[in-house]
Image 1 (tube, helix red, strand yellow):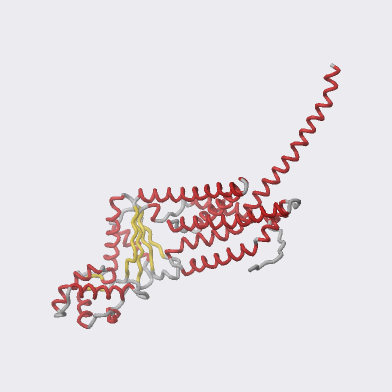
Image 2: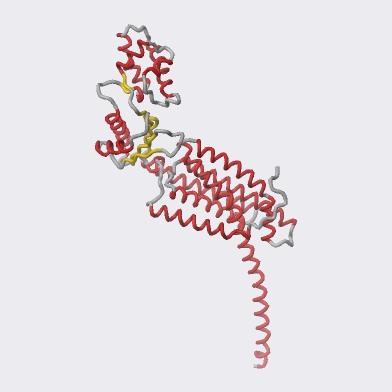
Length: 410
């Protein structure tokens, strides 16, 4: 399938606006990193505890922040922020940086304690919205026996499993607002519901996930992520230099490096968090952008054999035009996919999809307006050098010929 036939756009003639735009984006990205004191690393890299909490209604951000500030139990700076994502309604992210690795688990427990003290209920009842199955089994065993409900331990475990399944299934997703919502669970009757109401209460929040990463692990992951990216670039440089010429390999690696730097700069500008999924997206971007560049270079190499007398810039323009349909179809379909992930993928895939949206946009134009001009500049430079070298040699010989009679006369 070919979307564009016999096109003759002067791509390389329009290279300077894109080169200038790349320079502006690169400088803006580095400026943002310097002004903000570095990149915003996720819990994977900097270490600490990160807790995702869902509320039944709009999260009271100010109340959460003031509760943690007043408690003094949680060590280190505490951050509370909402998700800018339609799929993460009423969810907040509470994080604390690592102070000492031995305090990591204590910090997590203290974070849970602050939430329970602020939004929980006194009286010794069990919080059903944050209870585990084992907690619920222990709490209900004796009250159910007193209520004269015949039930073995296996039956009780099955019952509590069904209750928690109802709680954790969307649209509730961890939050029960009324005990009557559990009446549809298999095995739950009026006696069980009365027992649940007597022994449990429903808090307005649910702790969805807690991540903990130590300082050594975070530093090691960060170093390995950088090395993985550099090794990928080095391997591709060797491959393209072997398959084409060294200047093609260098141009392709510079273009991919350019894509990676601009994408990281955009992460800093928009204050997006860099996590392990983002590193995976960057490595995906490296391969994707490199593949697009190789397709264009391969067509240039074929045309060099067929159009020997054609000027190099004109030949490169023809090569880009000949691969234009392929570029638009592959880049366009991939872009639509990652945009869908960005909009509807949720907070887990937000960083991954943001990196690919930025990277595919930048990577598509870099193959044409960054990699190809580098090869063109180098070939023009070497051709000019080849022309000037014989001219200088001829001039030197002519000057020597003029001086030789003088030397003979002497």
